[in-house]
Amino acid sequence: MTSRWIPACFLFFLLPGGIHSQGAANESEIARLINRFFDALVQKDLSRATALMDPSSPDFISSRESLRRAFASDRIALSRTALPRTTMNGDEAHSLIATVISALDLKTSRADEIFGDNGWLFDWKRRDGAWTIQRFAPAEQELADQLLKTASPRERASLIAARKDLLTPELPRLLSEAARANSKEDDCKKPLALHEIALEAATALKNPSALAWAYWQEAANCYDMGDYPVALSLYQRATRIFQSAYDPRGQAAGHSETGSVEVSLGHYSEARQEFETGLRFASWASIIASPDISTTQSGMAKIRSGSRANSTIASKSHTP
Image 1: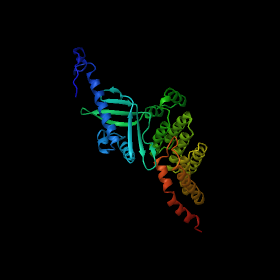
Image 2: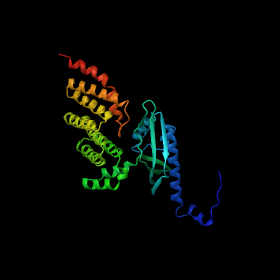
Image 3: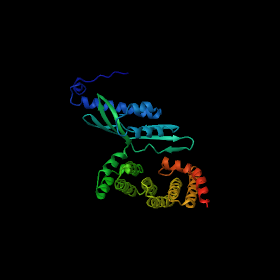
Image 4: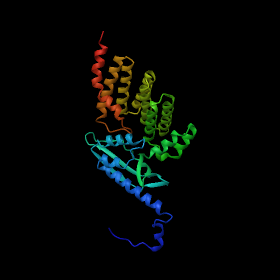
């Protein structure tokens, strides 16, 4: 390593007693840890990546599973455009870094949508002198957190207008995920109210596919809560929007999930038709370039299982 001469007048800021020494040292350490984390991502080393995370964090399990899904891709590439900007607050810190992480499936030549392309945020906590990751997420999560804490639609609109750089298809997706995460609560009003925030963001984005996916996620929530008629209406609305947007992958997911609801309602003939249509669009989508938003893994998994469901549906629909 090449040594550098440092003027004596600057040593004060580097010594332990210097005004800026502790903060600068913490920021430097966090930058080093971010480099290690990104290196683990590129190498698809789950153990090294999770070793930097706090296992007691409420986001640990979901973050680990997100990485596990991402590592199933054939190639992960990273391009860094800036050093992280870190804000210190005692034993806690918040970092933002402008970077693009892409995961490519070589079999389909499609990019994995698990990673966003608008930068990343890291929340840190220091325990026993060591910094650990409490949460890492796309940069849009910062705006999503603010929107989820804001009760007034007008105030939320102002927040979105002030952060147009974070108004991407990732934002309504994150908001929909927050709504789904709250669907386990006894009161179904909260997750449905959160879905409305996702719809607001998707509407502001003026992206038909993003709006359709927001309705699709709300429909999935209603389905999980057993409200099949509302879920059916929302899936059908999402599918119509996908159709108007010429989004075959969205249409595949929409028809497939509509079929699932029809099964739950006992409408087996209608369900078979929806599954068949979904499978047809899934086949078309496999040779068409990816749209703005890729279908969720859960939706495509059900599409792939549609052929198995069809045999069951067919036998039921012909039972006297």
